[in-house]
Image 1 (cartoon, rainbow, N blue to C red):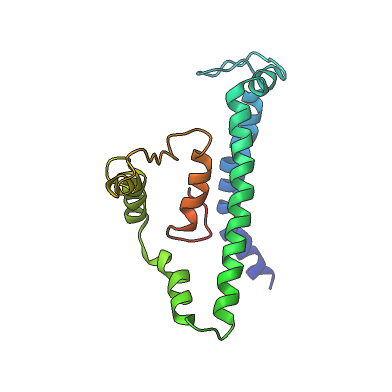
Image 2: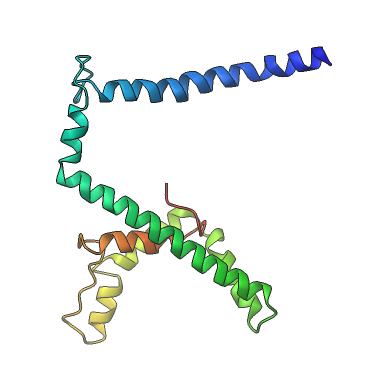
Length: 171
């Protein structure tokens, strides 16, 4: 029993060592660099929390911070809500159960490349939704969700719900 335990530790030790060095070592190194005067290149002169004060005072950081929380909340709530709804519809012996199963599993069968190209075409003003609606006669119709800063985050939340790997965030 002791030999088996020793063999298991010997086999796992390289993995643990790599994890300690690569993950925790890099995290500690990054934390150390964050309190120095580093900019584009490392500068090891200690600066304290100066970099953080400068970061939190940047308007772009505030936009990124709010977008991160908005995306996270909307993506999680939307994914959970739609997932639970589809699971309930599949679990209950309802009409069109086969259709619900197809809706639920279809995005998993599409590659990320095909889904990305499809969304690129749909959101394109020259060949997508905007062009289609203008072709129907509404010449003033504008569908610029991805180009408008106030709507782009909602477009990015909506796309993963209709893309492969439903319920997973884009990487």
